[in-house]
Length: 539
Image 1 (cartoon, rainbow, N blue to C red):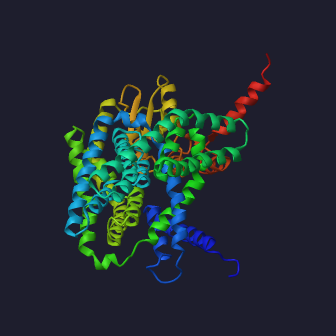
Image 2: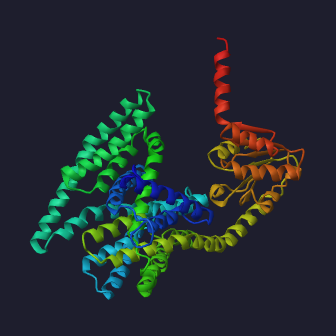
């Protein structure tokens, strides 16, 4: 093709194949990361057919790393970490040390250098942010105790990995002895100066700059300002202070997270961050040699065992030692039984610094793919193990609260909207609240209040609310498809029931009303109505 360039061809091949295989993985209820990595394998040098430009892919991957680490910084929450610091900080550190020890032992058996074994163990110790958050969000347990511990644990792991990315080049470049000490000292001084500069100057300058740009009213300029901050600080940190792009981008995101405009910055840059993150995973897949599955079966089995079994057992034991329940311990164990983004960065860094052979990188990548595929199955097993105990406890509490009387109100969803509705209806008569265990964990059955736990879209759960005897159903869950299932089933059960549902758009409202809702309340519509009423009010 006369107009084809390696850059365009690499980006197009990566994005298109990532979309195809990411969508296929999603349909199979797997993480889209699997699809992105497989897309990279297909355009890599180890498989037949088209081979993308590896050098350009690595350059694009660097941009992906910068934006990925910027996103990690944006989501870094010192408050969340401090809330669970007594278990998350020591627990994560001990678990990392255990994983390093196991990885180092395997590397020693394979004859790799000591520092290479350390990097290999580090790569096996850190879980994927994307995979972990998706698993927690699917189960609506992010805001529960076990969800907060898992997220806090992950924050500690990320901080350790950021420090490792800074120190490893210095360790690899030193000859040992006094030279090693001087190199480490120089690196620490540079990092300290950069951090101080960011905390003193960046904390004031970055919010001030964004505030000024936001006042221009230009969405395009605001988006450009956020990207300029992320890329500019990352590049400046590398060129002026000799620290990694990753550390610069992480601190840029962390400082920006303290700004009142952080939520808007996150939303505006998300599409570009996602696109380059996909290209990063594709470039990682290009490095993977599938032959390792056949040529190194025993080392691969040992690697997967460390990730899925070794880390999980260590995490479970640590959480139980801190006095938490089996449910919490099992959730943390399953959450950490996989590896992802930081593992890929460490694998690439270890190879580029010649700390270990290419086989080590292939084992890390294969271990990541397998562990991400297995992770949903672990959660399914854990869900079944914990459901019985939770169900028995809740049923006992529901029985103690007494039966539901005729003419009651049923509220589906106890999130941000549902909680406010429940508080307003506290003294207005009998109320039944339906939601998953995490969202009603702080509620206790009481006079006038009955709690039903489970997914209201399931007929057996909805049946417990006795819709045939209810006078009103309020559907406050945000997922319109799940809400539609609830509305449809409720209308079938009680044709005369008044149903009010929550909607996010005109299309959502039409969908819900088409399934039987008497009224679909949309936030934008209510705000507009209220503003119009205020404008028309006299006096």
